Amino acid sequence: MLERPPAINVLWWPRQYVGTATDLPRTALTTDVPTFPDGAERNTLTADCRRCPELAESRTCISWGNGPLDADLVVVGEAPAEGDSEAEHWQGGNLTGMAYTSRRSGRKVRDLLADAGFSHDDCYYTNAVKCHPPENRDPTDAELANCRPYLVEEVEAIEPTAVVATGKHATKTVLALDDATLDGFLDSVLNSRRSDALGVPVVPLLHPSYQEVWLSRLGYDYEEYVAAIAETVARVADT
Image (cartoon, rainbow, N blue to C red; front, side, top):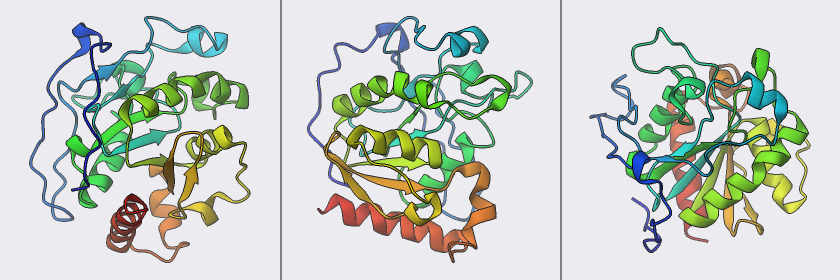
């Protein structure tokens, strides 16, 4: 486990959203036990947000970040899943109000990082855009920009060892804080770079929905990808 930063003041955390995250047992690479954050802490930064009228109109609820405030990693996704109200457990951020709680993306990323050695206690999960875009479209540049201050607030409060960005849009919005652009996303995967704006390294990962498609293109099988994630995060933690 990485050395944790000093504990931070959590008095600003809304009392009604404080809970205890449950760690379900998981053996790396040998089981499909889900690691869903039952009772996880939800970091509600505002009671309502209307910065993006189209998102505010289409969302069911805002999908806020969740996880411990002394997490080693801040994991940034693109946007919350539309959600499945019929699902027993992994309903998706648009319905649960918590980032990375869908079966397709949330479960994959949580299991991926668990396989790489990062448990619930190590990771705080959030999104570049906190509301589900209508018709499953990509977030617009304006929506990414409108939500970026929330991401900065989260990273500054948590003071992680690194930010892990999953997918093109998540990586794009993090790099934009330093006025950096993304020429080719696949070339950026696992190529860490330091964000001066956030004061931490950024490690891009594949979007979970396309992970199986692009792993071979990058020359990895799943086990090799997991090992590369663990190695990359350990390396940037030492810098």
